[in-house]
Image 1 (cartoon, rainbow, N blue to C red):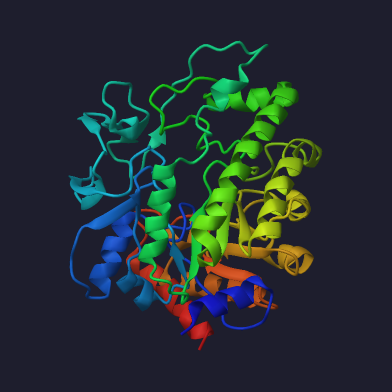
Image 2: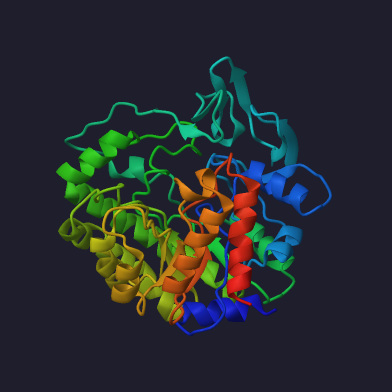
Amino acid sequence: MDFRKIALDSLNHKDGKVPMDFGASSITGVHCSITDKLRDFYGLEKRPAKVIEPYQMLGEIDDELRSILGIATKPILGRYSMMGNELSAWKLWKTPWGQEVLMPQTFAYDEKPEGVYAYPKGDKSVAPSVFMPKKGYFFDSLHRQSCYDEDNPNLADNLEEFKELDSDDINFLKTRVAELNGEHNYLHVAHLPGTALGDIALVPAPFMENPKGIRGVEDWYMMIASNEEFIDKLFAAQCEISIKNLEKLKDVFGDMLDVAVVCGTDFGTQTSTFCSVEKYRRLWLPHYKKLNDWIHKNTSWKTFKHSCGAIECLLESFIDSGFDIINPVQCSATGMDAKLIKNKYGDRITFWGAGVDTQKTLPFESASQVRSQVLERLEIFSKGGGFMFNSIHNVQALTPVENFVAMIDTVKEYNK
């Protein structure tokens, strides 16, 4: 099956089979404990799950699983994890829940009675940047906010992680592209470095040893509320660096890349938004549009925007920003009625996600209830294309493997 053609047809709003993604990005992935159980379920050789995003403990969807599940996507992994570990060499680690997994070689940690502390870039000479509670299944960033002048914040301090890609970075990505051997049977997806404007998962910089600037979550949101001029200058400077990198990435990826994950910045809560539509259009839209316009002018890549929550009121602005794709389409949030958003926006933006609720249905309800919701979402979102089936954000630990399989089988049956 030519999965890439099926996926591109849908992204171009053509009727046809519904493509499916699991594992192509850090926001459409599967917890490593579930990838392990899937291999067991399908009778594949038992081997440690490779954790390709340690921060969230996401497992690799390898070629065997991709084939069995019928997934249309394949990632082009970047050089570093969100904790700053290079994704090139691996070692065994036993998780707090007893699973043996492969972690990046530079993963460095301390196990204490309360849980696991891990270090940025594996550097134990500095304070740990993330923490996994004893009974947890993924890491959270630790508060490492140092003093700063909130009346006169230093722009350079919050730009220190945004640098032009060097020759080592470029060569690493060239190797990733070469590993694809020129195959075009899958839709290739990559996270672009440095293009996420104010992504709250990245603001604390869990990948940096001693980050300066505004690194506390509360401090960051207060700065957005109180000092738009600073944030605007920061985003503008970030965009300048990003476009220099895009010029290099265009040559590296060429037509092997199909979807560029531009941004993971969340704008929604369960019931509302973090900012007004007016503030979004003042502060974010001009910079996103600059990035997306460059990509559309110079490449064939589709641009991907992630935002959880109740963002219906912002969808028009995301479209005006030049985004082709919105993810994860949290239909359980206020105002995110599936039929409403499909009818109102479905001919102008692709919904990547929406397939099943991961807060309640997939982890806690029965396989038959999973099947029922998946069918309902397929009926709504598949009409006229513009739909990539995925769960609403990453599939979490403790999800019954039978529910995951019921979800997959329902999509396959729908596609006949």
